[in-house]
Image 1 (cartoon, protein in one colour):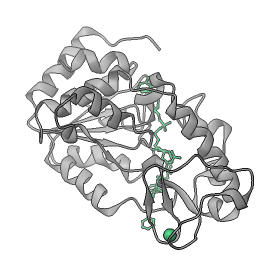
Image 2 (cartoon, helix red, strand yellow; image 1 turned 180 degrees about the vertical axis):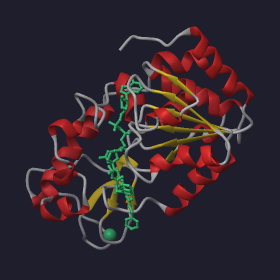
Image 3 (cartoon, protein in one colour; image 1 turned 90 degrees about the horizontal axis):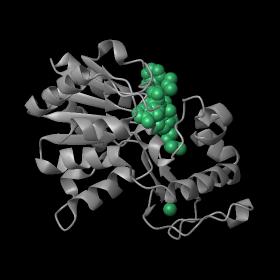
Image 4 (cartoon, helix red, strand yellow; image 1 turned 120 degrees about the vertical axis):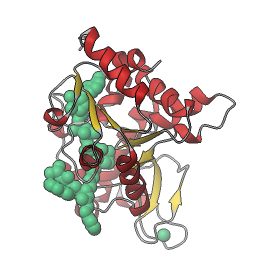
Length: 260
Ligand code: BJW
Ligand code: ZN
């Protein structure tokens, strides 16, 4: 895990990033691995122990909302105990230093990019460092009936179906505000991500297996418009063959090195 790619590749990545007019960054679970948040498909990933069909689909929630809430309650607690790492901080600096030049797009629901942007911005406006969260945010509740959001829900009691949170507007069950398999991503967020990918000369892809669509199309959009893909991942992925530069190693070590 502590491998760091050769100096020449890091220099090349630094040059590509500094010469770009527009950069789109796509992150996945791997950027938060060094913060202690489990990935999904790595050797010790969540999908090695848990079945996505039982926990991360609307059908699973319809069948057994208590089980789904129990799992999300456990993950909320785990994530609440984690903090952004130097990789999140470096990306936040990249996005904050020239507003409008860099767009952060994440598949992660852990909120760590947000926290890093606020920390790096200090007393300044953090908004250009905030990511488009394509798969939602695990700390928020959303009504499964009327869609009402609750930004600061109370901890969920998943001891029985009767104790699960319900909407105070329409009485339907509340659910985590995340995107499950088979559900559409937010139309405006996805549109903004693809628009940034079309405009970008560089798509920096960090810590994703690039297997889940439509998010995995973001780098392809940049490449189809003549831009290049720069990948940071300790493992080869579905995207590696299309990347102009691949830096094999942990994001928390590599990103601070290539982003000044
Ligand atoms: C490190 C590291 C370190 C480790 N540093 N790196 C086209 C083709 C085939 C299928 C489809 C298709 N289009 C749609 C589909 C179906 C499906 C899909 O993509 N399935 C494939 C898996 C086969 N997609 C969907 O269902 C999506 N919806 C949709 O398409 O809707 C259509 C529709 C339209 C209109 C009406 C209705 C429907 C929704 C997908 C939602 C995904 N949701 C999840 C759960 C989110 C909530 C939660 O967290 O509980 O999102 S699944 C999970 O996978 C999560 C992630 O965001 C997502 C991606 O995972 P990610 O981030 O890539 O993580 P890993 O674990 O896979 O990879 C980690 C990487 O990090 C590894 O490569 C490591 O090596 C690396 N790494 N340490 C850097 N230190
Ligand atoms: Zn409601």
